[in-house]
Length: 72
Image 1 (cartoon, one colour):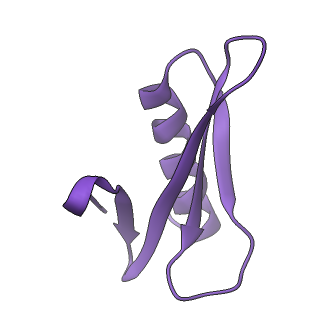
Image 2 (cartoon, rainbow, N blue to C red):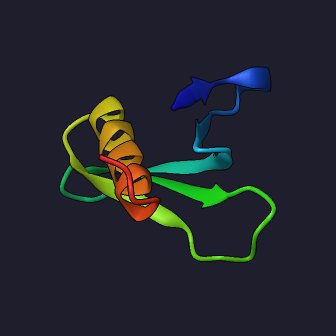
């Protein structure tokens, strides 16, 4: 897995597929979520969140992508 941030955009590459971070969202309860979309596809976005800070939301999102791709 590789996490890169070219041109101030964040991308997660895992098993040859790349997910571009679309946004961080902060809800009314102070909970963060990270949303990413697989580059070059029309598939659904991956969302990870329910964290108290943006980095934890990103970690949750990364775990979701790895699980979705059958990794551990």
